[in-house]
Image (cartoon, rainbow over all chains, first blue to last red; front, side):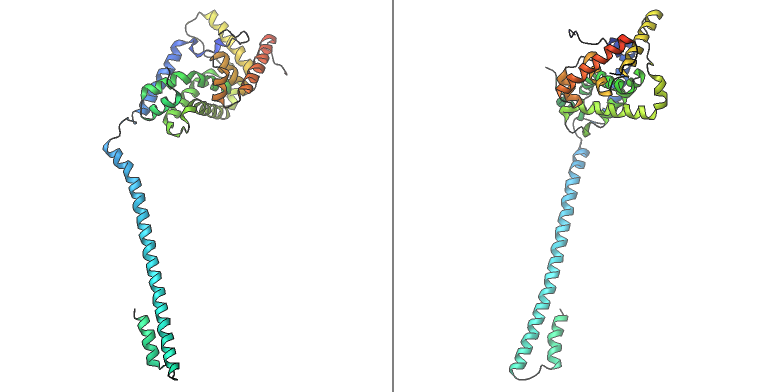
Amino acid sequence: MTDPERIDLSALDPARDSEQWSRLMETTRLRIEAILEGRTGAPGLLDVLAAWSRPILAAAAVLVLAFGLADAAIAAGGGALDAASGARRLAALSGNSLGRGLRPTGAELMVALGSRSAR
Amino acid sequence: MDETDAELVNSVRRGDRRAAGRLLQRYLRAGRAVALAVTGVEADADDVCQDAFIVAIERIDDCRDPAKFGKWLLQIVRNRARNLVRADSGRRLVALGETTPAADSCPATRVERAELRERLLGALAQIPEQHREVVLLHDLEGWKHREIAERLGLPEGTVRSHLHHARRRLRRILKDGGTTDD
């Protein structure tokens, strides 16, 4: 190095004891190789399956959730339809009865309500 | 042409031992310099840089930007060195200047070199930690300002300034043979 300002720190150079430094490098290299033993370049069949299993499971969970939500929505929608048709029947019965100047009988009301609850 | 850090890191992720060896050659000394800047003890610096490098390889998938492997590694070194210092602060007060003797020299030379190392470590202990890192990486490891800036996450101008102040103070301390209030 030609830098005239440089402080001579060579006494702290780890390679001054080349044997010790080589030993440190070598033990580090061996420990690293042991770690990398578990990593292989080409994935095996199990690795491929394991890599696929997570997205497939996630997709399945999304589908189950979507079906569940759709089912619940249909059930809720069906209940609303029942209530609406029951109300229409009651309204029609009341209209007919009033048009005839009569009050709806208990049997007629039971039929209207019964047909709703029977569904 | 040398492979970039990013290329080497990606190879290590695929289990390439040769790439790991290249990173080891490229960064172990720098890791030791940073560890020495924090601990002030050469034997501890050796242990810390080795452990930190092994941790880095174990957690190589956590290195978010492979192009900045050096910066990431040196941060691991720094953290582990600081943990060691904290855990061992009592001993550290008396350990300053504790050095590893070179095996291949005569007793007189060994004593002389041990004294020189002790003086250098004593002087380094009197300047800020970041200045120590910069001066060790530049004057001992031969890194350029730009390389130090990138890997310590500092502006290049700050690196130049730290280096200038570190050298000035070290020179004064080594000349006077004692402490300074500069």
